[in-house]
Length: 177
Image (cartoon, rainbow, N blue to C red; front, side):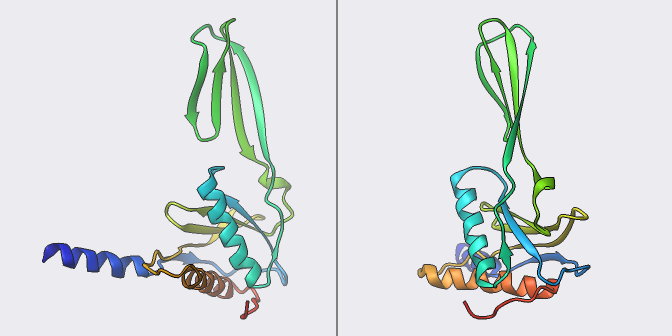
């Protein structure tokens, strides 16, 4: 009995969309968006692409995300040969001479012409909308995880959440696909 109640509770909790916050301030007449996945893993890129599609269906302008850049630093430390993954943005490579190369990757966000950067995370299905000019997070929400069998139904549910968020931000959206 407890298992059934737990499963029902999880189903109801997962169907709800939780809005963290929405700030409506200085919204341009025709804002430009760019969508940036939290990392370069395939599932993150696929989720980011889906969010781009939801934004395009709303009729807002989407531009290419800023390019990733890498900075390499070499120093002589003496030590093991091979790769060491420190975190998602940096890799250290040691060679036979004992010098170590630090490769750090980052996105050149300051170079984008977008008014808003939309950051996505496929694992939590979280979406953040960040005003580029102020670096302020103006909206943060999670798309609902539903138990639908039809992908089109899931797409439509997610699209509606994104459209409603844009409207609450003060962005003019196209209602139909």
